[in-house]
Length: 266
Image 1 (cartoon, rainbow, N blue to C red):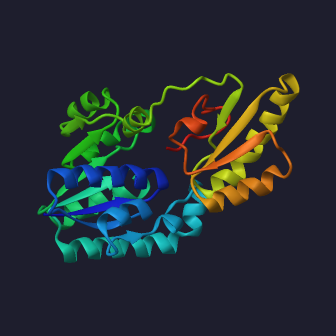
Image 2: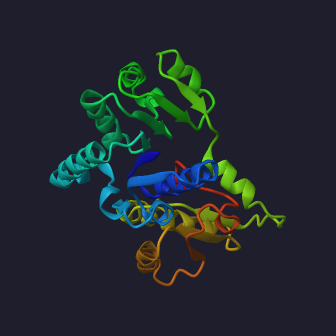
């Protein structure tokens, strides 16, 4: 059995790799192809395309600027699926690309099953799209329990599978003293996000330090490249420590600043 995956962001690469490993436990003979990031490629093999560096974009302007690139990648993805004839296509988050892909795939063929993992939060920004999704998606794997009823009401089969972040944190749970003076900063997993959000976090941290000099801060970087960017922005601010590749561990999750100070990425 062959499964084609599409993931376009770092967090989706994390979740996709975990899904692949779980599927391999059930069936070691499964073949994984498609496009995602380095973690999925490590599980699937060299034939799996790592395109995260170019695919992860932020905001409408960046999408428009790279329109030609995405149009070509969309065409290549369709060709790869047509040629490989997978038994199922698993789309992970990334709705701007994946919802369009699912729609075109359904028009072209009814042969394979289309499965959406970590579904787009259409219930928050456009609930009317749920009914349209039922026309071209066979199954939605939901990470929030209330999503199943919303999708089922529109005739779309949905199964609650749990939130991957909760499972990861449970596995890494340790018995440690909670540091009330340690605050975690999570500016995002993309370079553009870090350049836009992290300076705001730095400014907020400096203001808090004026009120409480005992505070310490740890910022989570998903890669060495982002760590270098953060280091340049920090200059000589010693109260903010950079940790690399530990966004889901105890080192930087004592207290997460979400929403007001930035966007959280697993």
